[in-house]
Image (cartoon, rainbow, N blue to C red; front, side, top):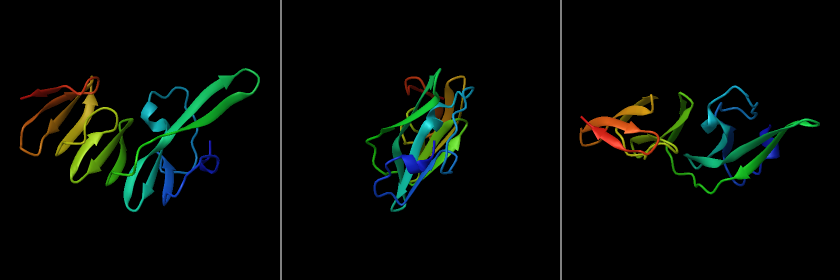
Length: 135
């Protein structure tokens, strides 16, 4: 799929998680968060929408696009271990997996990520339900 086939609106920059203008479905991939399209507008980042994909015996790969409703509100956006880590006002979190409220957060191992809050408390957060476990 190529960005030319996606409605980009008035974004300054539109990109896939690989920061390129094209996307190739990796059937083996478990990185579902990487199938979104991101954008930058006036120095902020957001999610433009999600790539849809299906396989047809006669046609082969069929790509589509489902527009999102998110606004550009993040200061930074990075791919970390198949997840999208965002930063806003000096705090970080993972899109769809945690809130953006941590001073620091590590990668998820067995569904838990180590975090530190701005007040100094630390512990682990579960990606499944965002439940926190404090030290």
